[in-house]
Length: 428
Image (cartoon, rainbow, N blue to C red; front, side, top):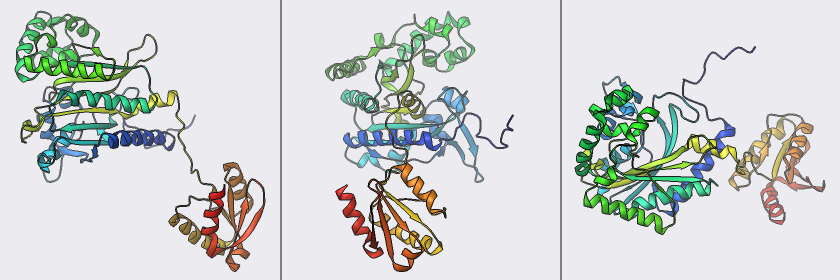
């Protein structure tokens, strides 16, 4: 039995190995293509932020703040956390850099790692990757629908089917205040049947009860009053328009009156996109988001509406592997450089740089000293041409160009090799 290595990844964290990284690259590429079409600009925020940013925005009674944040004090005494989500960081950057002075709305997207200390599960890690899209400075309900459409288009480009969209409205702070009283009144008489976490949530933030995954809690809140029945006129009108837009673009959705998401900054529209799993298994969330009209003001900026979505990359990659896409894992170069001898090796370094500068991909094995091994590898890789540089060719400033399909070969002056290769590649 092999001995375990002394050092391993921390619990709940994982290496992204080369075989997996091509999938991450594919997701990032699709996100970039969709972002470009909808005119989103990329932003990268620090991995570490001031703890107060998330305490204030996410809410101190949320699971993220109470249980899941990686927090630490710096030598200078600053209290920082590893970012648990992206929207608050983007909001902070929006305020700090005066983006409210830019033409509105400001559309930003990000792609990177985040951190939450939670129980590791399949495709759910303590260091995980997300792609996020944020629209700041526009309160029209058409933005809500377009954000949902955008994220669904990402999944369509990744060849995902069986998508399920769930939507709800959690109102604004005015109508939500009245609803909370109704909800608390309903839950109070059933408090002893709630899980211990939800009994605490009932005192601090009763809406979080509706986010509980415990079966006994789900049974209780499934009969609770529904937020959509108690929206103010403005929130009711906003939500109706969102649904009208989704109907117009023919995006099928389910109205889930108990969907609240897990962050305090959400207002009005909230949504999740799921992928239907195998029969008998629960659906799995690929993305979630909603509107956060009060966040910028809460963090000290001007009153600015916002709406956004975040996608879980590990789970997306896991689904991609079920039906693998044609992702190239290797250099697709048609050129292989084989060399023999110390002088040829030196000349090969120069030749590789010439080809790189000319944007001609080349595969080489400069670490090998046997010509037979190199030619065998070139043959297995199915390259079109092999450049052979031996000791004699290096002295004469010549290079042998072998056509790997026909077996024919010719000798070319080293100074003309780039021009000849370009000409040969154009013909092939």
